Image 1 (cartoon, rainbow, N blue to C red):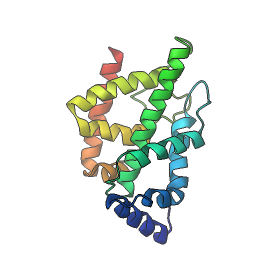
Image 2 (cartoon, rainbow, N blue to C red):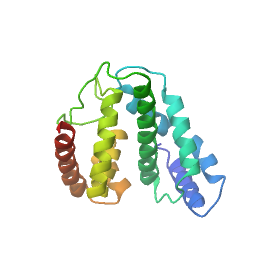
Image 3 (cartoon, rainbow, N blue to C red):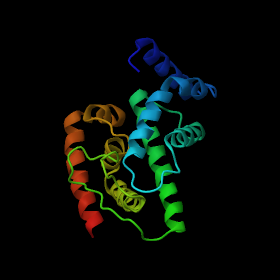
Image 4 (cartoon, rainbow, N blue to C red):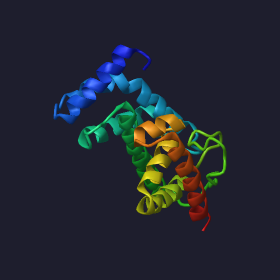
Length: 192
């Protein structure tokens, strides 16, 4: 979304949604659709296994959850951070349903030490790894909610350090420190 006119319209619509305009998100969706689709594509791109939950389905499901949920978006970055969280929950719900249908199978480890940790890593995580990460991430959120938000932005939305800082509302050095700490904490948690 490099068009300044579109960026201004997104900001206007986010404020309208926050003010209670029920149609603001409907008008916002076409403007951010390509960004949401790219976000969903990155998340879906690294999965091992079945591909029945496609990018389009993930975007549309996330939109429905956003429509029914929070409307107090402070910025485009905050909106994308909330969308990443919605996609995380959709993917985890999907993984749980798949796991209930078939236990075991092809399991791969999530490499939390990999530079540029992302769900879009080649040979990325299997659905079972996503469940383990989700459980660990919930535990992290109990201890450090901001670090959990940073992981959601970095891992599930594939946001840069700068985008994550804007979405979470902290400085880039804070994101870097929290990201390193969260990676180590999650690694230990998932190894145990």
